[in-house]
Length: 193
Image (cartoon, rainbow, N blue to C red):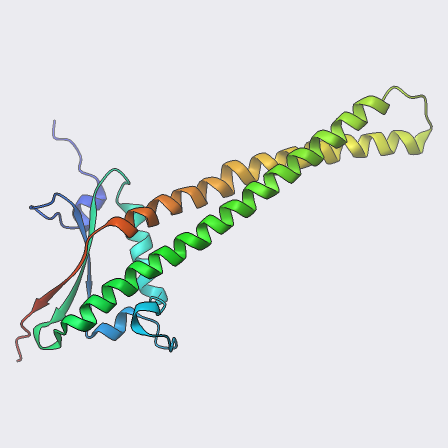
C-alpha cells in the first residue's frame, strides 16, 4: 500500500541539491518585501505584514525537522546586487526582531506563571491553616474564597505555561529556523506578449 504524502510536500517544492523545502515568493521589485510606510533604511525596514504572515504560515506547515529555504523571484531586468544584499539582510533582521518580541512574550509569561504559582500557594496554605478555626459565616466565606482564589490562580499558572507558552515556544522554533535558513533571489527572463 502506498504511503500517503504530507500536504506540505505538494505545496512546497524540494530543492534537489540541498533537500530543503523551498518557500517561493514572486516579486515585482525589491520594495515589495518591505512595508511601504516604513521610512527606515532598507536593512532595517519592517517586512510587508502579508509577506511575514505567509512566511510564518509556511513555517508552521513545513515540519520543524525539515530544512527550508526562501527563494524570491524577480525579473532579470530588476537585478541589483546591492539591493539584493540589503534585502536579504533586512529580511534576516526582521526575523531577529520577531524573535526578540517572542522571547519578551515568553519572559512575561514565565514571570506571570511564577507570580500565579506563588500567590496560589500562599492562598491555599493560608486557607488550609485557618480552615479548622471555629468561626461565623463571614470567616467561612473568606476561607472558601481563599480556596477558590488559590485553585483559580493555580489553573491560570498551568494555562499560561502549557497553552500560551507552548504557542510562543513553537513560534520561536519556527523563527529560529528562519534566521538560519538560506535566503536567495532567482531572476527570470520576462517574456513580453
